[in-house]
Image (cartoon, rainbow, N blue to C red; front, side):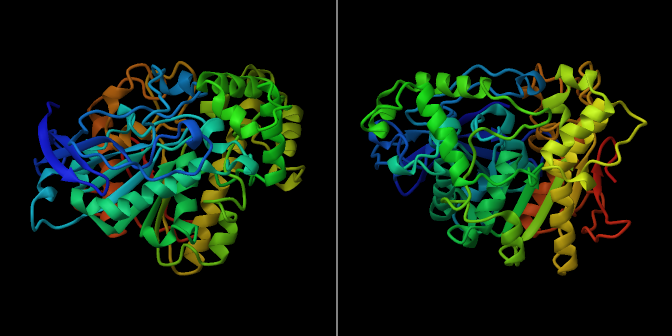
Length: 499
């Protein structure tokens, strides 16, 4: 898609100039999309602002170029590079708290109808990712659904989730997300979006974050609908004592345990040294097979994470909000397909490992399917533990209380599939954004044909329709009924033929 210099929009901190891209064939009625990339929503977290809550960005007076994505937040390489494809590091502390907006070009005109807004949060285990990557380019999704699409950066790894309350470091990544959502409420109308019709969505860690934003009393009023893709609802809450112990180990690795002022010492270190120490911390962990729990993640009771999702559900914090939730067919192959222990597992070893993951609960580890190998059975059950079971529980709760959710299962598998991934964690992302060309070396995607591109339009179109109306049904889309519970609960399957 070719771009040309686009309109200027005034935000609360200054003006930005975007670019205009013609909508590709097959996406929407043919109108153009305006893109505004790399817009700062908070001050750069450098100097005294490293390990501090997000602060308002200073005002700028010239028109700011928003043609290109801003830098990612500092981070280590993703643990899913072998599945999703490798990315060249593009991070920088300076300017990393930025977001991106795609909106129909005609939404910027005076008197135009405000568009529904999707604020989408990337995954990455709270340790990697960027809303500015071409994987998540929102142009096609905005055109397909006549939406305003927003993607965001937030601090990850030690810069975002190191737990040191004494220096102000508590759930900083979650605080960034809240700041970005408030920016949307205050500024999105200037981009043609409706601030009162905001869907918060995300995948994996981003889905965890979207659910937290929708149920946190500090941000819940900003959210109308929620999209949860592969939400890790089986992830055990991070207690503050455990997070503090991890932080202490990290500080020792950096050689700062005896520092008179740990916060000052941390802020003085080069960011590369902080990332190197985090890599050493992860490499030094001894984990049971199947344990993919992020080393640093949101802490229960801290900002942005006031309680568990189960408590929020019971307290009615999702009442009045539309919910769409789903998983992919073989979630855990992304993490475990290349683990040599899976090939050598016996059923007894698989059972023991599952018992450790479920704190010894036998009902969750028996019986194993003996029609497949022990490793395959283990991978399937761990996927249920981290992703599938919680999805079913949330949907069943909604159905029982008369506010059903829409539930999907994404099943498309790559061809070829040399790694035996099946349909792994993250497999649906190229289809949501229809950004197939951004994954030139992704084993999870493989070769793409016309049937795949049609699947992308169907999947993206359904989630766009949900963003707009609260229902993923619409012209040209397969009928999708709400989840009803029981033996035939209505789960929409997105594969070669959505049904």
